[in-house]
Image (spheres, rainbow, N blue to C red):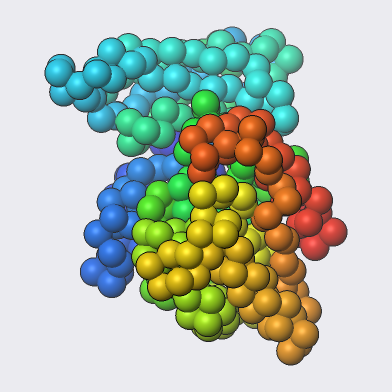
Length: 329
């Protein structure tokens, strides 16, 4: 079997800039803060998914990736490719860092549907793939789940891309998660709401607010109004799509500490939840709210802010329970 175009095999994609998966509309970057535009260039959550015929021995993936400078402490960090089948990790395959390389991932002989999670921190671009000793076809499409949030949604401090809470919940729900988390961002930027409105999707989750405590300090009234405006813009493209608002998870330093405008994270969380409940009460029957406050304990935070693998798993479990009755499977 010859080399195949990777485009039909890509999942978790929002936009393509040429052949490169990106996470913001490349034709509308000028309205975004520079930090969000920079994070959007990383293919967070992008996967290669395929069906292997029985007897296919391996899949061979040709890709391009960033390579750190020789003086970078991470210069020798190998590229990790994680092969999953459903909710089960099959194996991890490592490759030496290179600007362009080919990696071979052995497959179980029985074949089936598989997903390959890429070394997303090196901004990989799949170039082609082929079967070794058998045949591949694109995996069946699953309902798309648009997940907007900050560094926690992006997966910070999870040890593997596949362990982030959107990736884990996507597997549990049988959805195709499109990770639109931006480290340092997700501060209620309304152009991003318009991006979401233009993307096709069968479910949406909005998980932001913690960066409105310190990164861009806000008041409770401001966040309440911003959440309503954000949802209103999203609803222009998704009037009847199940939408879950996930308020900020535990952040001990911020819970009862006023920010520069005198507002605590507890007050911001309540404002966000109140905005969601009010919108639902006003007639948005497809909108649901999940409070993030009780999902984690301090021991689930790797650095006092970002969850570790166990914390990501707990968030994924709660989101799965909240979304399961309302989403296609």
